[in-house]
Length: 180
Image (tube, rainbow, N blue to C red; front, top):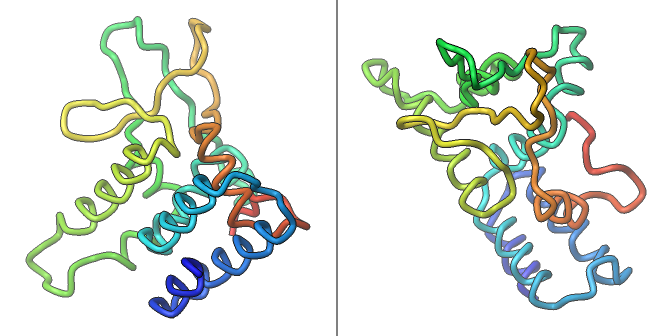
């Protein structure tokens, strides 16, 4: 019932597919807990297609760059001076240059609006515990997830809950990380 109501409120193809897959996964008992089902459907209802795209990207950022035949970003050790942080916004902007254009303000004098929109979207994903990023001043940075003293390729930034959510809204026949 909740998925039907959410579907009636959107025209975004990606959200409709996510809701369809959620209903199928509930019917197949791929997510047996009713509380989690409700929470996940509510997230699909609340999130935009940008949220869903960024979540899929964060599930395998290295794979996203590799699929585009581009160099995989490296995360620097944090125990060296100066500390060089890989900012989540810059990572998204580098991976998906068209996203900035999609979310820019229609008012030419508001160039920071795209940055603020993407940062807000990232904050929503972090707040929902779907993505793991570090807070760095007023923005988000990519954490170094290992203790190696050298730069390492970026790793998935999605949490276990985020993986479960993606599986819930993905076609049960295909993997949730399709880089689309």
